[in-house]
Each structure stands twice: as structure tokens, then as C-alpha cells.
Image (cartoon, rainbow, N blue to C red; front, side, top):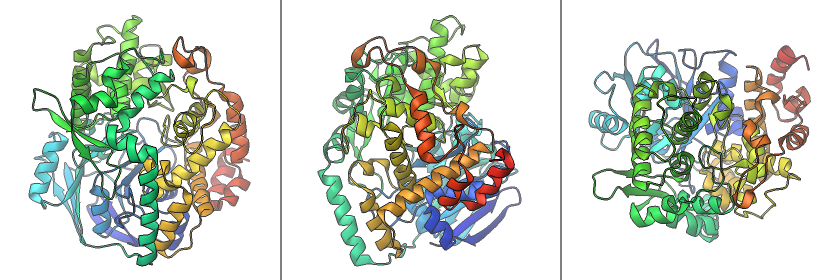
Length: 601
């Protein structure tokens, strides 16, 4: 669309600026564009919950074009949970309407003097009073805002958790979709911003419509033939992974104390389909339809999910086999606006602290009722929920046992025990936003055999494969496409879509180079705030304590050799800092000055 919307909430100032060709070609949009803006404009050391922090909503060059899985948007900020640069993306339909309202990105600065929401309708943008919706859950907020704007508007909002600046709070759009991780909801709450509503009538210009149609058809054909996107995800949703991960002995159980859960089948995708499923749900421009509209039998409680990460976090991680209890915890997270991974993992951490006598009166493994109650308490910052609201690392440190927090850079780990998946351990450790499977989904090659199966217990070659997946994923997040497209589509598919949509002759190698550029830019952002090799680590449990049972028994993560090779291949120093030569090679020369000033390299 060629335009960026700027909103200063403190000054109530609304303005626009052009999206430059250089920004678009070097960083595409979404995650990359957000990182570029944040790096240039945010000084080091800024408190993430201060008015000086920025919150950037961005679409990608394929958003709104109908390209497969293009119905997403990205939110970028400095995370209050981790202190790192952070982007979190979400599906649904909000992103497409943001693009159709005429904007590639919305950059929010400052803090409103009272609760507010923003209404963007084509060229008109308003900052409106939100006193009457402050305190409402995300569902009631969306309904009220739509009644005051337009019935077809799409709404992204925070719930009570974001208002109370819970560090594991999310931004929820379309009621059930979340920009989930890193506390982006807390940043929105710190700005006194309750919601953004968008509606537009503009169609993105496609440079070569006929050839773009061919590119889209080829991508759809690839999706329709891949067994993951054709069968597994449509039929069983993401929770199809429960039994798969359990079978290989890498389903984290009892806060990662074990890798095998005896009751895994009770919480599996197959059981969800049998007991809770109402219908499949798809995001905009998606044929995979991995979403699950569900309902708890014998009640009026319904919503979407639980997804794999959610059913694992509230299930095996907490030792809970009660599927209805897990579904209720999931629904509550969506209503309060909470990240299900960090919420479930933090409760699991509290359960371990309780079991070892380090947390008096805390929840116990297997207690579904206590787990659900903890979700409510976190959303309300009440009782023990006020401690849990800070995330597992702060909780564990407060009680003298930081080793009980299963996190990297303060971000709770998702549902894959890296002792049984060596490359996933490296990907967790080197993720720029903290423990994240989506930065480089090594499960694809190490477990699912896509595009080929590699030995999950070996470390050889894992650094190069991790780097490749991280770079491709950075480009995918910047287009902004769904991660699941990577099961079926390759960089050639993406390049064909991009060049026919934009008229710019992108190649597959161009996209990998763009991803490498973005990964280095994020790395320098973190480095100037003190992040280095010391932070590219894993909880000591994974390095020293072997798994006690299952098909990954007696394994630990051999991290250091992989990390050394990773830094060498990245062109970084042994401490994990990009060198001036590397930054110049990836066309980030302007970042070199900061390297010289901060590290004298």
C-alpha cells in the first residue's frame, strides 16, 4: 500500500509516512519491517512498559492478495517478559482488513491519558474513549467495539490481563486468535490502548495478475499434496502432535521432568476430534483449516482450540488428563488475553516448586481445578496469580530456584523436550525472542521427516540446518505467511508469489538473504542491550539431567559444540555478536556503528 500510519497516543497526533522501496525490498513487511523500525527508532535500555516503547502492527506484501495462508499480521515491540526485540503474529482476518484500510503498518507511540481504542476505516483514523470497555474480556470488548464502529470491522484487543500488564498477556483478534507470546498485550495495556478496529475497501495492487494466479495455483497444489497440510492438520489440528511427540519420548511432562506421559491419548488431537470438535476453522486465504471450533459437552462453554501447545501446556506439563479442564483453561486464556504456552508453563513451574516444598499453598500436578483457577487468578492478578503473572523465571527466582523455570531469555519453552531433539535445542537457544519453536521448526526435519528425516540424536549438521530454517522463517514471517505453509511450499514458491505480486524480481536466494538480514538485525538489537552467548543457553536440566524413560531415554543436549559451529557459520564472534564484516555483507552497514561503539570489534 506504500504507507505507514503513525499514532502518538500521548499527543493524540495521527500522521502518515511513505513505506520506502528500500524498506520493502530489504525487509518485506511484518516481522522484518517491524524490526527495522524498532532498531532505528528505539534507544537502548528503554523500559518495555514505558510510553517510549513502540508497538508496531504490520502486514506483509502478500496480505490481502489471496496468496495461500496470507491472512496474518505481525506485532513488534520490546518485550516486557524477555527484554528482547519481539514479534508475535496472529491469523484470523484482522490483518487483511488492516491492509485493505490502506496501511502496511501502524506504529504506536506514547501513552493515552485515558483508556482508548482506535478506529481505522480507510483514510479515516480516530482515537476514541474506551472507559466503558476497560475491564471487559476480549469477547465483550470485540462485540462492543463492533457495535460502535461497523459490524464487519475486525478487532484486535486486550483483555483484563493486558490491562493489568500481566507479562504473559496477549493481543486477541477475531475472539480466538492470538498474537500470543512475549507480553505484547502488556505493552498495549501500558499504552492505555484497549483495542484497534479496522475495516477497508482497498484491494492491494498486483503487478502481474495472470502470472500471480499461476503462482497461487502452484502453491495451492503443493499444499494439497503434502501429507501434513493435506491430511494431518485438517483432520486433527495441531494437537495431532501429542501422540507423535509422546511416542518419541519428547513430550514434556511434569514441567519437563519427564518426556513421556502415560495419559497422552486422553488429550490428543484424535480425542479432541472425538469429544470436543464442532467444526474446522480457517484463517483468511487458507485451505488447510487447522483451527478447531470446540464445545465442552454438557455446557455452554465453547470457542476455538485447544491447539497442540495449549493442550500440552495445560495437559502433560501440568500432569492433567482432564480434557474438559484443559479446554476451559484455553477459553479463559482467550477471554482474559493470556499466552497459553507461558501461562500453562508458569503454572507447571509453580507445581514443581510446590511439589519440592519451595512454594507454600501452590497448585499440585494433576489438579485440573487448581490449574483452571490459577488461570483466573493470573488474569486478575489476584492472590498467587500476581506472582504467576510475572512468568515462570521471575516466579522461580523469587522462590530461590530459577532452575525450575523452563525458559530461554525468560520466554517459556514450547512443547518439545530438546533432549530428544538436538537441533530443536539449538533453535531454542539461538532464537532472538527467547525459547521458540517457530524461529526454526527443527521438528519438521528431525521428527516429521519434512523435507527429509535427519537423526534427531545427532548434532552433526544441525547448525547449518537450523540457520537455513531460521532464515526462511524470518522471510516467511515478513511476507506475512503461516508457518504451516513451509511444510508444503519452498522458497521458490514464495519468490514466485512475491515477484508476480510486487513486480520486483525476487529469487529464492533473495528470500533466504532477506531472512539472514532480519536475523542479524534482531541480533544486534538484543546485543546492544547486553544479550550475548550467556543468554543462548538452555535450562541446566537439559544439559545435565538425562530423560529417565521413553524413546529418548538417557539423553541430554550437547549444546556447546553446536553453538560454536552456529556462530562460525553465522559470521558472529564466539560470544554471538555479528561482526562488522557480516553486517556489511547482509546490507546492514548502518548497524556497524553500534557494533563498534558497544563492542570495539
